[in-house]
Image 1 (cartoon, rainbow, N blue to C red):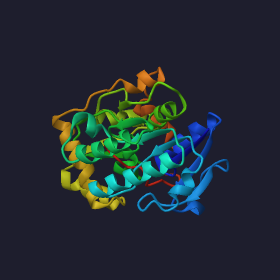
Image 2: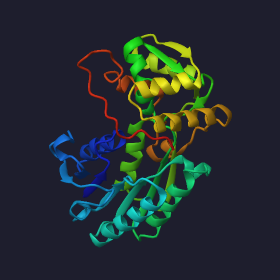
Image 3: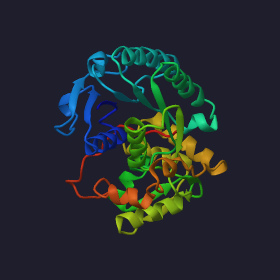
Image 4: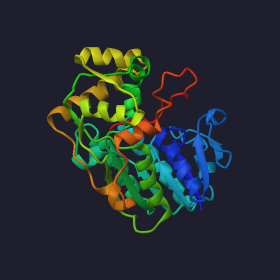
Length: 300
């Protein structure tokens, strides 16, 4: 079986690539910059761009399944891109498509729900065996929110210390996607994914400290101070506002632990402490630590 992975150089896409290779599948990746992809040698890398579908027809030729991550900005462009992509996929003879959507669809969150659901509906009408993956908060967002202060000062700063979250490990998202691509029984399903624990930001800092095996201090800050810290660390201002908006919402409307990771995989999801242990090199102040991958920062 040949699987096309779009977004293969992002955090979740890269985890999916490893999972598929480990299952003995042929993997193809569509990426803008093949020379910088840093994917395993076994991966067939095709130069292309989902935004304008450059290279998409070549990448889809002969594939059995597709992991789809929209590269479009704006609702109308996302819908147009999805329509064109699934038409190419159908013409190429693909059978399955797993679409990375977001938990906003499950909870019907205004602003995010409409675009994500419209794309889902395009995929559902394609005639392909479809599965939607709807993660909430990605645990990997912690690298962008708190990574710089953890590395430099062993400190976590939060404007919403008592806001609850249920961050999900990107490896669990990838494993659910792999199951939907490689095994029967998932077509027509939409899986809402979360981590296994509902934790305040204080508790999340403690879980990360546990996973790293070293103490971290926790410092409450104002909204403006948190935004400034994110931007100083390299986050675009609109993404900083986006993430802080979710934190403010979670402080008053806590997200729930969802059962779908365990339903699909037959085991509980990985904890935030396990995520931190898996990303110890990313959160170390060692100057030769692994370079941080900026792709894949999303909250559903």
